[in-house]
Image (cartoon, rainbow over all chains, first blue to last red; front, side, top):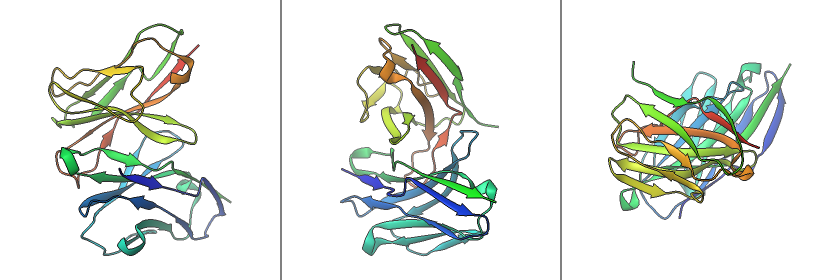
Length: 116
Length: 113
């Protein structure tokens, strides 16, 4: 069975600080997909990034960057120079295709609070 | 534009009543999912469907049922609402490839009193 662990329940930072959200996953499959979603206070779920298990290249998108390390089964998310608008709950999710599956298994989320 | 919509957005119901939450998507995705979101638990899978007439139980399926009579809709029914089912419910649809992201509805806040 697959599992996603987001050990950080809540993180508070001051604006302009860098912050890293941790995500550790468990699966026996060699082919899998990892996702990050953002849930702002308005409640909708916003897709941020996807990564497949064969692509360990790190990705940067503006102030956001993702570090995928298969050796430690981690897919961490870093926000550089955080802003108040980054305040949200962030979810990491895993998809495996074994048995014809295509469903997302989510972590419990990390609440990020960015204060002035 | 294609979209996924949930209705109602908010509902208050009494314990023991049957409740149905609607989910409708216009992407023509085969895969549809229902999750519930609770503090400390994140998003947990209730039921899912990979196509018409296909339904499967997720990790928290007790007390819930779904049916899939067409591609666009996956209604979620609470057979006899309980206070433990007070939650925010999200419907999602996803294309057939693992790498594709899921698209989520706006959520339904259900309160069982």
